[in-house]
Image 1: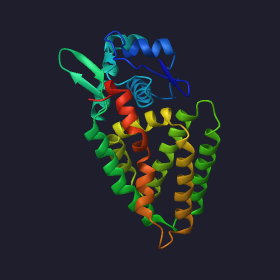
Image 2: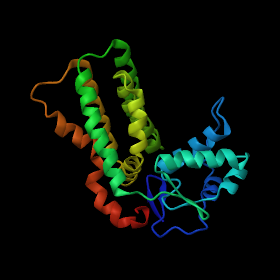
Image 3: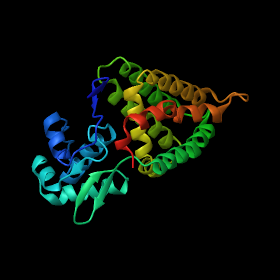
Image 4: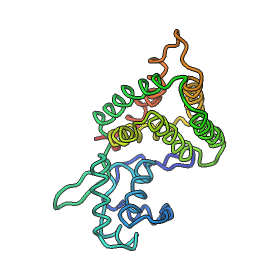
Length: 256
């Protein structure tokens, strides 16, 4: 086993016995149900969160019957949750032979990056210097929590949730909430690589935080005419590229 910031990442190939229900049960990582959350929503959220944070690794077997028992529900909401994850390219469903957590595909990763790099700089540039005091307060609160998260024991999980919320706020402020959900659907493989990169090189989180502060400053005061905005945002979204070769070499079984 190799340890990075208290995360355990197997270095060998996954076995058929490593089914996700067993992993969730043994690691005790079933989160509490949110109020008014139905069985399908609960199963989807728990599975998705654990896939995105690599508690459930690429290639892990999904046994819907075992998951139904674990979640104390019938197989129907579990099956529906699996189909929802399939729509986000997080689960591969094989007729007559079961399902597995999808391995990371480079074409989907690059498409997620492409979409975000195309949309987000335009959104932010359009809003630069034009956000309201209420919007500024929301962003400032998120940044304060990001800063605090850098010093927490479980900083990677907490920070990435706040990172996600920060960018979600940008789309909401631009009046593009549906665009955000479309982007997130295509960005699942990109986001898993970013998370894995953070596990291996977690010092980069402070750089991401500083870049978020710069984005906030631009939204608050506007953008200087000579600021190299495109290059800045390309670096912001492309932090994973620095260590990608090492990740690919160390964990080839995570990739399709």
